[in-house]
Length: 301
Image (cartoon, rainbow, N blue to C red; front, side, top):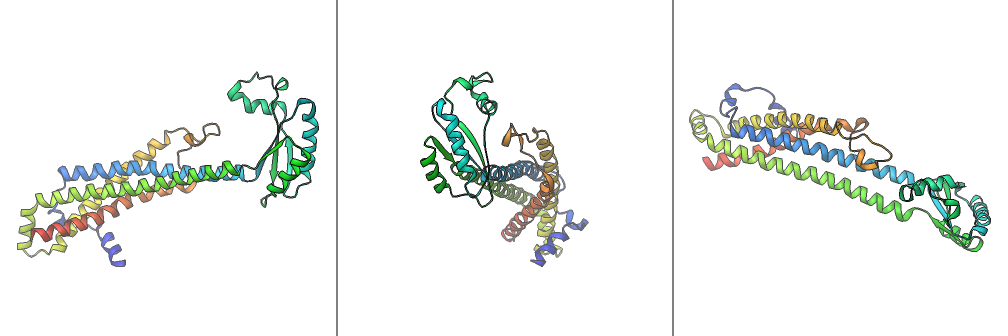
């Protein structure tokens, strides 16, 4: 491992004689730079997606974990009485720190996105909603349902478990999809750089033959190609990362109303991950070019 790291760091020391074996311009140089830049650009968005879904899963868990809703469906003449009875049951339930019946204005605000702001809620048989705040340990939902069934027949308890788990699972899987996309991008980058390295080796076969005649070892020749292609990948990925980060900055900032679609950005120390993208691309190029160069040199011998 130390030897591999030492070989990688030695790529940044200039060797003019070795550099002459690898053409500084041409099709392979452009292909390597463009591939690394394009893949780094895509990695930035995959990272943004993965981090945004991680924050989304955390927010959903926090918002739904310590709260529940009680819905009371009863005739208007009995609704106030059952609401008072339900509040009494909730206030005497261990694990519940507070319960509050939503006002008519609050319920109207909840329904306004579907029915408009002028909904005559007082004249409609709309269930009464009670907002429940619980401790971190929570309460016995099964026992509470039995008490409510006996004392408040029209009450239906929703502890949000059927919403919380599927939403968190969806966000977690979407986050895994982002990391899987990064892995696929790395594989494609390695493949493109391998093709470019093979083309460069084939195009310079005569130069390689002359270098062998004057005593150059295959490891020395391979290292020259590895250095050139690794540095190209590093520069291309750096440019692609900057371009990708600039594109992410143009997206709408996180908003409560927009939710996930307006939160695809980097927050806090998350932006530090971007500094690793060019070096990750360079590491992929280092491995891919090394394998391709040694294989091609063995075939040319």
